[in-house]
Amino acid sequence: MFKKVLICALMALCFAMPAQAAKSKAKNAQADLVVATVDGNNITLSEIEDVHAANPQLSGLPLASVYEPLLDNMIDLNIVAQAAEEEKIQDTPEFKRLVKDLKKQLMARQYLEQKAKKAQTKEKLHALYEQFKKDNPPQEEMSAAHILLKTEKEAKDVIKQLEKGADFADLANKVSENKGLEGGDLGYFTRELMVPEFSEAAFAMKEGEISKQPVKTKFGYHIIKAGPRRLAEPPKFEDVEDELMQMQAAQSVEETMRQLRKKAKIVKTPVKFDANGKVSLQK
Image 1 (cartoon, helix red, strand yellow):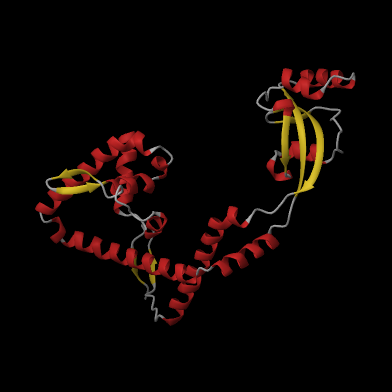
Image 2 (cartoon, rainbow, N blue to C red):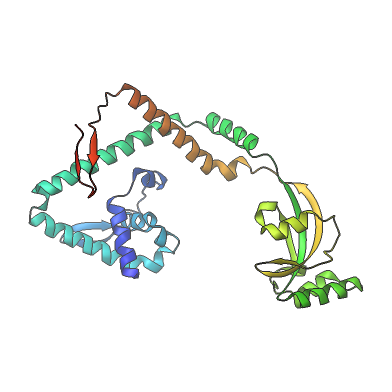
């Protein structure tokens, strides 16, 4: 299975989009280190790094953990490519058609990428940021702690202990199924962050109040202690800059395509499909 993932990564390298290349750092001397040769043809560290970065299934793993199998697959790719060249695959009509189609795709991507880069400025990004804040006004957040039990009976027994003066945080540490939370503290959250049943109950409570009945969700039975509320701070520009750049690039591509379509002379030939999916000209 892992072998298949690596092969897919190599295919991703062969058809890597310029957008991926735009994220790559400038190649330094270490990246251009020759790590293998195949019949005199060099394989560099930068090629291995590009394969690693191009595939989501591999990019989350340390390069060191997949380096050897990636290198072996890169060697295989070079061997097969050389064998194909020796058999003149590059001269066949099928290959030439593929190259022509790929050239169109790469040129289009490169063109749109360059247009997006030229249109991208700090001023435009900050304007998008201000619009983003207007479109996403601060939401109300509340803090809470909870004790999670498997059964309703257990939850009601704990509520009785709390009514008799037991400490909420101590009980949470001792009996809650959610023991990873110190004192059952959930921190601050918006309504959408929690399952509906929990949010409905929690946001209906006042600060310091403890639920008098267990709140059932798919996780079990909760006893909730409501905490303070506040308005969530908007994200900082730096935290959403990448998202804003993507938004701005998408707007640029959309505008570029609109302008190009406006200038282009487009003629569509009407076609029809029969019951078997066969295409023919409409008369």
